[in-house]
Structures are given as structure tokens and as C-alpha cells.
Length: 381
Image (cartoon, rainbow, N blue to C red; front, side):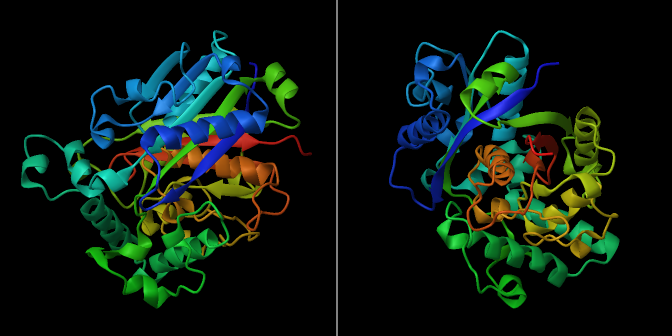
């Protein structure tokens, strides 16, 4: 099977209240990815967007971004999920042989809506939605408490993930300004604003405005566009049951199955030895531990023991992760872009030494209901 490579990318710096309209953000992301690859809009054959009508406040909201996203007179489609799913859609279009260059972008502007309120609309309409209690904060609290109770993990262990990701974000010029806290401590995280016990503000990914784009090309074309494209060598995705009460929130079965599929496709037998860097989409700090365990990087309940510092044994989220920059619908694309930067040696200030094979991850739904895992590789021996 012909490989597909990532040949261009661009991220608009996330902000709490960005001084751009939604189409402007998307334009700069799409234009920046094309410039990186030395391409023109006319070179594109398909454009895939990741947005959400609920977030945009419009039905069929992608029709308002066709021009800005580079899709004028092009084949265009939308994925109403995380941007990593849009990348998978673009990947399949390239592999189909019908499209040669796919631009994929994700964007949202939560400064214009109350994110936690909107997420209530994801709930069951006959029970959870009317009582208006289950949202991203309360769902995270249920998941974190389930994980702590099952494995005896302490709040301090989880707070350390928040500390690590905020410190890493301080090294990343494209992280959200308010996530860049180089002097943060475990005490700071634990005693920050309580969102829903035991989840506090500094251990949770706070939504911000932004847009991220990347460009996919089949193997022979990718080699002509740039030197050393980053190849997608494995992908796996899986979704768990819709209702939270039917799931064990202390583990992630869908992440395990997604990883197994991606590993098999990429020929990975021992991820602890064969993966150089991991970029996870964690809605809350405890999720990073559960997801890392599901990837097979350590035993269940032992995620806090992982050495995840930059240039540690298994660097996880050297960019700061979603805690460092969480733009709904764009976060999964950003995780892929951050992995590409590591492989190409372009992660200025937080570069992992000799990174050549990476995991990039996206998710949707409460408590990581649906997960998608990508294996990315460079050309280094």
C-alpha cells in the first residue's frame, strides 16, 4: 500500500479571546500550511474541516468557511468530531487514489460561547440533558474519582501531570498564554479553582480560540514536495458505549483497541522501546495517565510512575498537551502537528532528542469515549 505523508502544517497561536474572526483564523492556518509546503491553493484536490455546528452556532457551519479554508471550487467535506478524525478522513481520501493533496484543518472559537454549557447537548436527551448536571467538568470528576479509587492513585500524583504540562507549555511559543506557568507547583494545581471535585482548573484543559491545519500527500508526490516527509504508518480508532454508567471509567478500552490496531499496522511490537515521543489529547490530567496505560507504556494504575519529562524515557506531551492549548475540534490536529515537529526537529525549545517515531492521539466524547491513535515516522535510521 502506498504511504501517505504530512508535507505541511501551521497552527494559529491559541488565545482566550483571539482578535480575529473565525474565517480569519482558518485562513491563516490553511495559508500557513500551504506556505510551509511551498504549494498554492490550486494544488489542492480536497479539503476536510473539523468543526461543530453546536460550537459555531450555525447549521451546516462549514459552508461559511469554504473560501477561508481553501476549498473554493474544491471537493470539500466536514467532520463533526476532533480534528484527528478529519485527518483520518483525509488519509483515506488520499489512499483511495481519487485525491492527491488533502488539506485538513480544525478550528473553533469558544470565546463566543460557553463551552461547558454546549457540551450538555451531547447527553442523552431523555434524562441527562434535562437535569443539566453532566458536562466536561463533572464527567472529568467521575473519571478521575473512578481512577483514584480503583488504583489507589493520589491527587498529588495526578497534579504532577498538570505541573509537567504547564511547565512544558511554557517552552512552547504556540501554547496558550495562560497555560505557560514555568514556576507552577503541585500545591498550586491542587488548590487552584475547583471545577468539580476533585478536578481543579490547573489540571483541566481550558478551551481557547484557535485553528490548526496540515497537508497530506501520497508517497511519490510527498517526496517531490518536501525533503523527508513524516509518514503515517499506522492508525486505529474505536468507540465505547454511549452511556457513562455502562463503562469502567478507570480504564480506556477504546484507547487500548485503537492502539493495538495502530501498532499492528505500523509493525510495532514493544511500544515502550519503539516509540520516541507521545502527544496525547488529555481533557484532564488524570486522562493522560489512563491513556498512557492503555497505550501499553506501563501497567494499569502505574501511569504516574512514567518518566514523561522532555528527553526522559518516554516523553509525553513535551508541547504541554491539551492542557497547554485546547481548541475544540483542532486539538487532535495539533497533536499530529506537534508530533511532526518532533520528528522533523522543529520543536524549538522542547525538542526530544533523536525523535523518529511518535504517537499522536485524538478523542471525542465524555471521558475519552472515542479514541484515535496515529503512528508517525520519519526517514531517520
